Amino acid sequence: MTNTLAVLNKFDSITLKEMDNVKLMNRTDTKFTFNIAQFEKALDIVLNDYRILEVEGKRVSRYKTLYYDTLGLNLYSKHHNGQLNRYKIRHRTYVESNIGFLEVKFKNNKGRTIKSRIKQAETTETWNGDAKTFLDKMLPFEPQTLVPVIWVNYSRLTLVNKNSAERLTIDLDLQFVNGKKTENLSSLVIAEVKQESKKNSPFLKAMKQLHVREGSISKYCMGIALTSEGIKKNNFKEKLNNIKNIINDNSITNS
Image 1: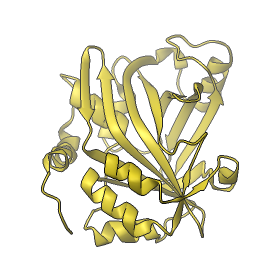
Image 2: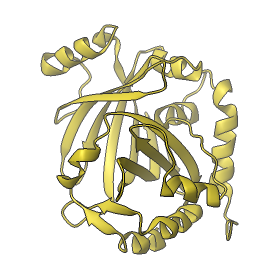
Image 3: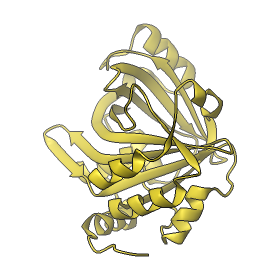
Image 4: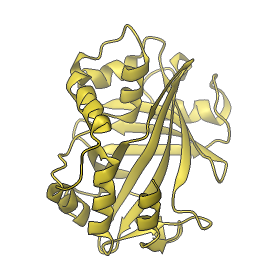
């Protein structure tokens, strides 16, 4: 991580206000999962093509995210079964600023991701007031069926393309907390390339150069699959094995 931070300090910075034009709430996502050693190489390749979000002097921020699902994990099951028009519901806290949002992510049958959110300081286990009004509007099912199921915590940095409407979110130091069980994946990096429409970019070219293939499992589904017993995970088996191989690969010295 020390080497990573040193490279990040070389990037030009961008403020939250300057990022207003690249919120990309309705977008396409291209995802990659790879080892931290490959990530440091990718940063060197794209150094002159992106700016990094800096908030109060910090370029890496800690996120704590509580995901909600039904008692039967219906939302997880829809993702596992490959159904589109599916939802994720979560509360995200930006740790350094202590700001929180209740969020709904909708993946439609055209492969687009649409995110909506309202400001909400605290997580909740019951739905009322503004939170219930928001979820009633956004969901085709009763919000009261939703319960907290897992914490997904990580450090995030954001890169913004200097020349086009493209934003990268890159997650490090991933941690899943499900009841008394905790999984830490410190060698894993998850990157999402967010664009208005899918097209080439310097980061995508860097991934190709480093032989990193597109593909990922959602952090929520990964966390549930790794920390829960007695649930279906056959459709994620290949991805989970790939993640284990990435984590255990300490031999990446060149590409």
